[in-house]
Image (cartoon, rainbow, N blue to C red; front, side, top):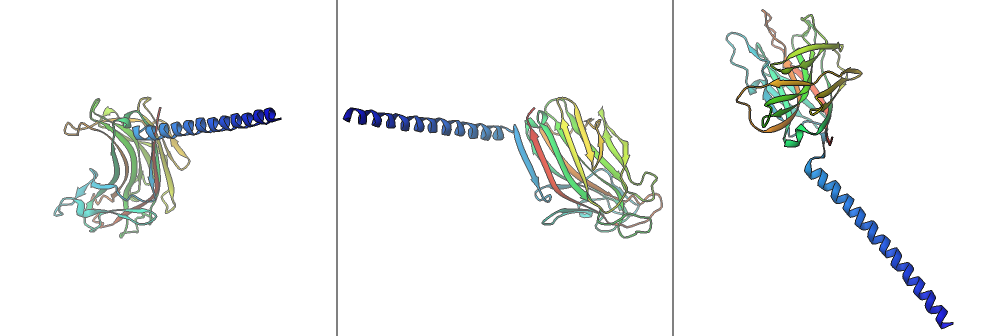
Length: 278
């Protein structure tokens, strides 16, 4: 009987050892998976950014500017970006001068992997007022945005995709949507669709794959699959590799002879930016 009891104890011990061994293997494999995920994230193979507003982004004066005779040149004192809890407001021509001011608000990430990652970006935007020929207090030239990756280290080309919503109510292209087109040159805007000017929220998405030279631009249910662009930039651009997610507005052009002093605003929220491995 003692012999049978010893055998039972031995079986119990072996069973416990097997369970402990299986548990050790499971924990080791789990740790290895977590470590690999962490390592991938550190290497930039899967990075995710996002937020409700543009807090931490930079704001600069863009190139879509004009100052009427007698007006001081357009400067940072003419634009401003306000970050509220749930959205950001881009402002242009805040001093209400006879100028056209260009507000570019952007997030920049310097990372060599920006060239090899698949970028998926998006945000939601709207006009807080309706541009019209009867509105002399608030009016617009454009609302626009996009994603670009500058390859200053190799090709010295700016790769990306961008859209422009034309909003000057006196212009024949009022409400038309354009995509940026460039093939290693200075680039140009190409008409792709029409989006009726209103004060509703609209959503923009861009998927950019630089190695495949592919980009898809979507605004609401409108889609352009030929949005990939390669832009030649001036020689004084840097030598880094940097990606930029941008939101932009341009205040109404007071030419020719229109002395309107209108403020322009655009609201943006819920942005995301995913870097995915190939």
